[in-house]
Image 1: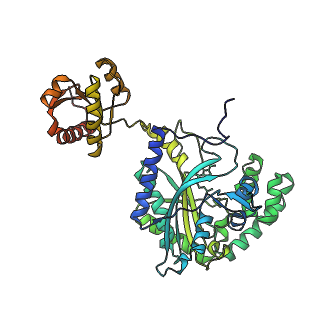
Image 2: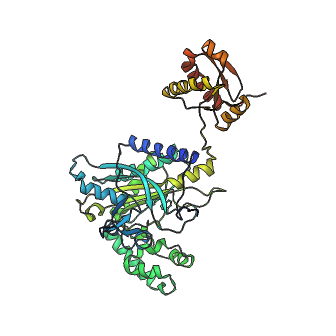
Image 3: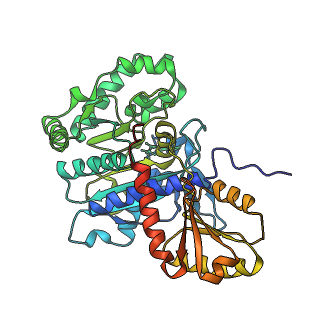
Length: 436
Ligand code: AMP
């Protein structure tokens, strides 16, 4: 009997995995430029960690967690996001004792949410993110938002919209929640059962409701921006101003509240503008400021700011918008015409790989035609042909598979010649087409 993959999971294979690696390496590189250091935390955590941080009013905790009892009777959860685990790690390892604040971490890894699978929404997906904890200031908030923007720009998605809002300080939020309670109480009879619960626990969550009739009611709700205290308003304006000064435009979206309970203050999301042929897959990435999260998991009351990107969403957009060719190919396909040469080629391939070339070779005697077909299928840039004559003269034939030009090269010069041939090959890829 065939065993299917678990619903909402997917295999990432070959060229697609190359694309994931490219995105992940770029993101890590950009985060390193801002002084962030890597952190790796466990995929499983004790369930109460997420109840306390992500929050009992969130959809994640209410409906989407993969929670099970382990053989020791403990309630364990597959992490739905990484921020909570990182805060737990800061407390476990007393990293807050570091006097050099803020603590700045980047992370990468799988997350699990029991959601309805659809475009851009999986049950196991990968997040890249950063957290900056301690020493809060609008500069820190702006730094994280800018970092995310630069990641997108570097992977070729510079055309994104940055939506921003503020959930205000305690005082603003209490006043706003009260206004929402008053407004939604008048409409709650017509709303879904989730919203009825949300009204009791946290009316902010109603703003995230995806039920079409409820969305209409939400449109008439009071706006957060009208309830911000002067200090929260000034803070948001400072973040927007500092981002503008480095060329990053933001758009205030007063309905943006994010679905996790720990956010306070500034929240933001990165979205693609509408593009033909690209599904609306929601935010590419998102994040915000959290004033109480570290304290809620047992640490000191340091404030923090973080963001997370979904790698699946970034990969999907790059593939569909930029028609990114995920099949990178190899530098060299090494061809041996008989058994003894095939054996010698094993050592030659090993030497070339040691010099950094990507090389494959044939292990069975085949016709020239068939070997060239294999080389083309593997998207080799060059074929190296080694026959009896070549062995005798200690030279090989190097053929450019794009131009079909062939050169005889002494074995002792092979490495240097290959380097220059490859450089010329890449240079020709970027040349503008010549006029006839
Ligand atoms: P969140 O942790 O909910 O703030 O989400 C941050 C980012 O993770 C989103 O902007 C998405 O890019 C990504 N993401 C969240 N949920 C999923 C999912 N179910 N499948 C794929 N990506 C997701």
